[in-house]
Image 1 (cartoon, rainbow, N blue to C red):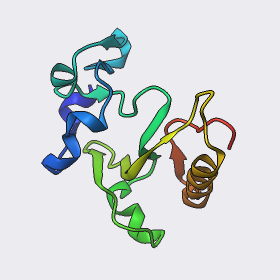
Image 2: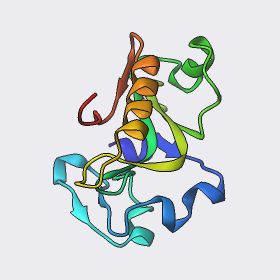
Image 3: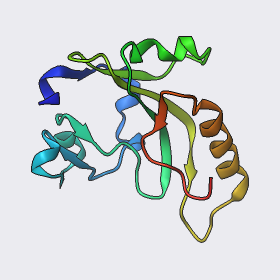
Image 4: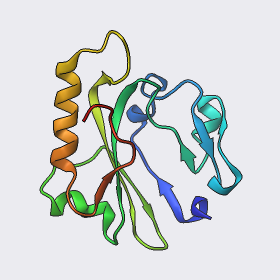
Amino acid sequence: MPAAAERTFAPPELVTPARWPKKPYCADDLADGVCIRALQSALKRAYIQANPPHLRVWSIYDIDRPGAALAWEDARLPCPSWAAVNLENLHGHLVWGLSAPVLVDSPDLRQKPLRSTCARWKRLSAPGWMPTKAIPAC
């Protein structure tokens, strides 16, 4: 079960309620399915929905190889906001916090911020790197 093998340590300013969905999907074991919980309860779970609906606040990458926590150095990228590593196989996630949320699904959608975000994701999408959720229209 990943809950025991994976721990995430993030600076307190990244865990402000404004950066997270109010009632995110979450789970301790994905085999049991996900449920919707209040943010304070969801933050204690092993798996949590990071981006609010229709917004991208975090750019999250799944690195499926040992040494995931330092993959950003290999790719000569800026230091991520945080990393989560599975201690059993050393695979993990690298997460960059965006300075301003990007609207990705709305009638009021502005194309320029979305295109900028898409370009950044494509630049980061190297072999062994995979965005955890694609952005529409990229």
